Image (cartoon, rainbow, N blue to C red):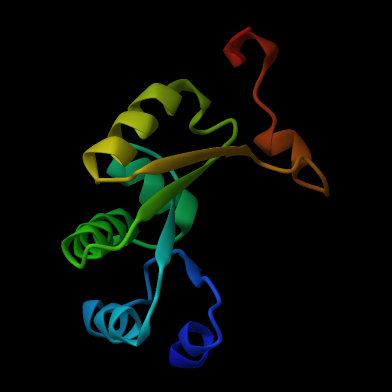
Length: 128
């Protein structure tokens, strides 16, 4: 990180936030980290943990987002939308703003591969 800063490069940490500790984040910030992007899977904690495949993921993500903001780093929240969470897009945006995100990215899942049918929302759930 320090080498990137010395070279005049902009650094962006894109993370699930599950394996990142506040101490490591602070070390990166001290070394010159410019920005952090955290992905969230849903606004509802139980669903978010299920989608992430990790109990407690939502709690860890929220705590790390608070730490990003506390350190004064710009925060982007990224949300991948699919069948399991498409009905909660507004709530996910509200969560991102409540976490202190200055920017929100909404992406749709890539509907390819053998499980594509499990991810595609039915037409009734797609807002037009």
